[in-house]
Structure formats: structure tokens, C-alpha cells
Length: 396
Figure (tube, rainbow, N blue to C red):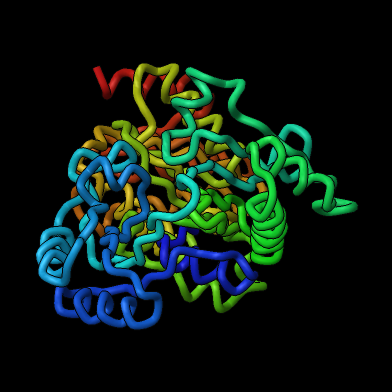
């Protein structure tokens, strides 16, 4: 589950991380009021207007702009709110902006030049340890830094038995070339950031840039936070931060009815029970010359109502040219699934997309008879290869 920048910053602040302060606005008038309030509280004369969408690269798409007076605050907020923001991380249609963050200007003049760093905390799945990744090249795409100057990316792995140790935070500050007040500030920043990551059961905390201000303060100017959905039962307050407007509407609908659905870009819809079988089915589709249009795990039950909902979700995608149902009847009997498919098909009326059904397991023979004798335009298969051949045939 992804959070907006302002939500991530509020979370960071609650753990003692210094942040670029800001106020969310949904209209230009609210943006002006937010700017006035920020000036009173922080003394900032300029304001940064930031689109709040779940996508990186907002500045490149015109979603981050500097306002030097209140007239510009109103004008820029009016331009950004309601726009379809296209960034390197969105589709060609972009994402509609419903709100902006009016933030203080933190690049003020002082004794030193401001400097930007990159920092993230995530799980290294190869070692089973949390890892802090950081670089002196803040403000840039970390992928570009990794490709062109990999020696400028550092990593620090944390033993889960001990947590982040003080010497590791000092090592990070040293590798970033800091000294004096900035060095001390960075060690505190790193410790607080890691505490926020662990305490919220997050899968990613990315701050780009981390800013060293002209007076040697260290602060988060941006935040990208992904929470582990499997741990949200422990964080009811964080679960309430979900913004469904930023998510795929079909995936939201599937989640509401308890189906595991992920939208993809292919032309063959999948309905499978079990994540492992679903992955194998997607491989099968690719071998047959197609591309999976979705990942859909219907789970251990597949009655008519559940199958009908699954069909409806798959058919919302206009790119789907065929549907492959691949069910292993272990917990659920194959004949019950077959009857569910027949009933769902009749309830939905004529389905123009070809359907191939492969049922294996308990009562598979009875299930095949039910499908074959239903009189519906549904093809049955027994073996994996047979199902692949039939998918290939309908796509030809």
C-alpha cells in the first residue's frame, strides 16, 4: 500500500525525522490559505507546490513548481489540481491530481551551499536483512546513478537481531562526506528513519532528496512510502490512509470481494486457484503465444457467484481475447467448479470471448462431462499442453 508524500512526511515527523513542512490543499483557495499559514509558522517567503499522486518523477511532468508570491501560489495550484499528470512512472494517460502539497522553501541562503542526498530503507531479499541504500547523488533517478556511476551508491545492511547500530549511522554520515553539525544531524536522521521503517512494518522508505540545508540541518524534502499490506492488521491507523483513487479500480473492486487480482497488459485472462498455479498458468499462456492480462487467484472456493464476479472482472479489460480457467480440485471439487462456471455463464448471458477450462483433481472426469454437455461455448482441457494448444488456436 503506497502513501502520498504528505502522509509519508507526517509519519516520518512522528518518529523525530526533520521534514520540509507543508499543508495539503484541494483547491487554489485552500492553497493560498495554506501558504499564508506556512509563512506565519515558518517565515518562508516562497512556496513549493507539489502534486500528490502515487508516482515518481512529478517534477518532470510539471507537477512540482515554485511560487514566489501568493498570486503564483493560486495560479500554479489551479494549473496542477485537476490535471492528468504524466510522469515516467505513469501510463500515457497519466494520473489525475486531486490535491497538492504547499510546502515551505528550504533552499534558503546561508553559510554553506545546500546539498542533496539519496536514501532509502528496504528489505534485501537475498540476505533476509533490512538495508539502507544511500548516495551523494540526491535528486536524480537512482536507476540512472546505478547505471552510470555505481560507485556512488552505498549500502548498509542491518542485522535484525541487533537493529541499526550507532557506528552504522556514523558510517553513513561519513560516506556522505559530512562533518561537524551536519554529521551529527545525519546520524540522528538515519536512526529515526530506520525506526520509522521498522515500527510501521513498511516495505520501502525512500527519501529523494535528503537535504543538507545552508545552515547544516538534515531534512526529508520528499518521501515515498510503501507499507506491507500483510501487516496492516497491526496498523489500523495506517490502513485508513489508503487513497483508492490512486489505485486500479478493478483491483480495488476485486479486493472488496476477497479476490487476489493484479491487472496486466496482455490479451488472455486467467482464473486460477492458488498463487503458484497462477504463475505457472501465466507461463503457459506466454508459451502459447499470448500474454497474460491479469493475475487472478479465486482461492479455495469457486461457486457460481465467485466465478461470475471473476469473469466480470476479467471482461472489464477490453484487450482480453480469451479466458483460461485452470483449477486444481484439491480443497474444492472440480465438478462444483464446473457447475459454477456453467451457472455463471448462463447468468451473464452470451460471453463473446472464448473460454478454455482445465480442471484437474477431485471429480475431474465429472467436471469435464458437465462442461462438454453444457451446450455453452466453453472448451474443456485435461492436460496443460492441451490447454495451451487451445489458447493458441483461439488467438490465431
